[in-house]
Every structure is written in C-alpha cells, then in structure tokens.
Image 1 (cartoon, rainbow, N blue to C red):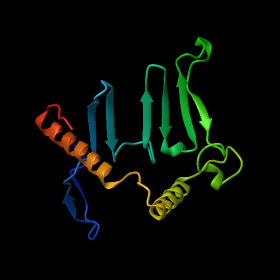
Image 2: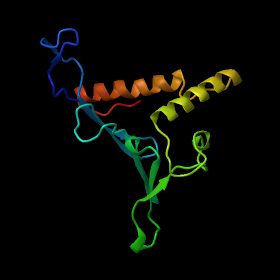
Image 3: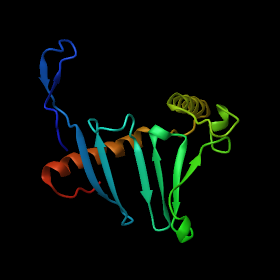
Length: 163
C-alpha cells in the first residue's frame, strides 16, 4: 500500500494543499483454502484507463477476462482449442444473456453502466418484495471488510494473515 501523491488541493480552497491520509495504490497476494492463488491490484492514479475495473480468472482449462470499459464483452480462452486457433475470443453480450433483452432485443448493441444500475435496483426491489436473500448482504460485506483489514495489517507487518 502506497501514498504517491502526498498533498492534494483543499476542495474549499484549491490554492491550499492538504496532506493525503490514504493510499493511492495497493497490491495484495492471496492464498485460498483450495490452494488457488490470487493477486489484487488497485490504483486511483494509474494512467491509461478511464474505468479500468478488470477481472482475469485463469485456470487449468482456460481463462476469462473482463474489463468494465468494454462491459458488453467477455473474453474466453480455452486451452484445448487447436494450436492454430488458441487465443482469447470475444463474446458479445446479447439477448441470450441475463438482463440484456430488457434493454435491447438485438445483439451487439451492448448495455452500459446506467443499465447495470437499473438492473441492480430492480433486483433489490424484487428481492425485498419477495423476502429473498440479497447479494451482497451485510454478512458478505463484513467478510470483504475482514479481507481488507487483513491486507492492511499484512502490509504493515509483512506477513501472511488468515481470514
């Protein structure tokens, strides 16, 4: 965890600089119960991306890659593809995928950030009305907070933390 920019302008008086008390970027190595490993990186100062929320999941049979800047696409790599055809293939979202048809009946148009928020609110309202368990709930939020706290302690103490 690192603070790169030590001072930022005061929003109320931009000519005055205030000390920064939180991190600009962080990295964490993860080990899971099933022996899988993970890496999480975050930066609010990284250049090049406007909304670079990206997930990459790799396994023994292939990989999935998603970035929020291209939210209508999912990239799939299958290890068993013929040697000359191996590589990531782009899957465009369309009416066959959950929630897409609510916005457009034709493939290839994509849905946007605001559409996703509409789906989230609909799911929340429907879940409350049905008395269904919501995702994510406060218990899951608490688990995420425990992981974040363990990462912060690990960064200071330079040791693995069990969550």
